[in-house]
Length: 138
Image (cartoon, rainbow, N blue to C red; front, side, top):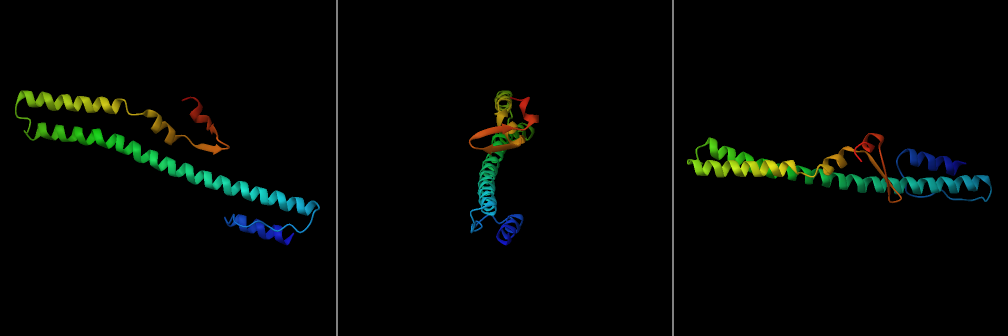
């Protein structure tokens, strides 16, 4: 029982390394083996969560880039118009067409990326289960 109790305290403290030793082949031995299996599953779940978090952060970075690039271009062209760099009607039209093109780029931004980030997801055994609030989007 002391081994099981120590194992529980370690798990409670967040330590998932090291299994408890099984000394018996009775009910306590079975409980010990089940505890070890639970600990292995918790460790696996934690690792999967870390992978998901890394993917999510990459996705956020990608969305940020997808938004910043056209916005920076739009800002530059509008600044050129306001600062008088586009000093002819032909240049102003060219700048405004560029702004229109970049605005269209924003309109086709992959919305699934933003949706994916906003949905809590549990990945387990290569099957995805989506939170109830995300089901309506699917």
